[in-house]
Length: 294
Image (tube, rainbow, N blue to C red):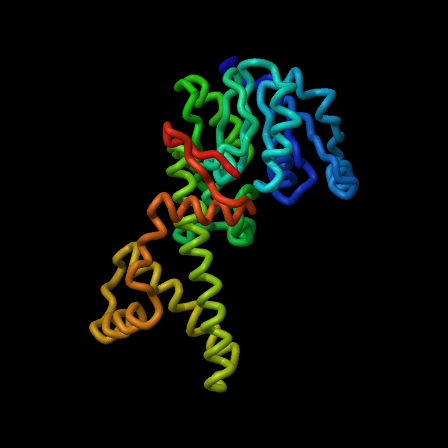
């Protein structure tokens, strides 16, 4: 593989994530082919002034194939495209689930990588209206990226990092980890735990209003402010929780959390949630311990 990417194909360029990535890549010096099958997605790409390329026309010459498509179709899409790629090229997916479960079409002379945005931190110092509006990242607010490229040399990682920093710009850090470690970050840490807690807090807000008659705006004001306080104290130790608050926290843990909740960090549990996400029977492992989807 070369240490720079002369030609890039972005598949799924008209999708939600594909449009975000395309907007950043279009402002770079990279030679990018924007590929999209869905008519509505093609219209969105063309409406931005970008041309739509047929992937079969460009895939053989591309150094980097970015698959901005849902995980559940990555097996089918990679099965159609990877056999057409030139030796030494790289396939980049945006989520780790399919890579973790070995859903991607295998070729020994092709590199595989994953890069997922961390999204702007809740503690990020924001100075402009655009930064405040950019909750997702990739527009104005700085974010980090977690990436895996286990077969890549330092020079190859540097070449891929140059693309990743453009895709998700503005980016401060790219954290290189393994595919399995990335899967523990997402889904386990950020979806199984953090996103679940976000939806749980919304349910608690609705229940408070419904049961007590507290006005919606008053409940929202109290909750939103205390979300900030809870995160600042727990993660930044800005002030200690009061003794009374600690008693309430313990009561909440006793009545809400299961005693065995940390089992979600066992690999067998990671396999279960990945299988559910990919809508497969289960993730099986061969004698070497490698995963394979069934």
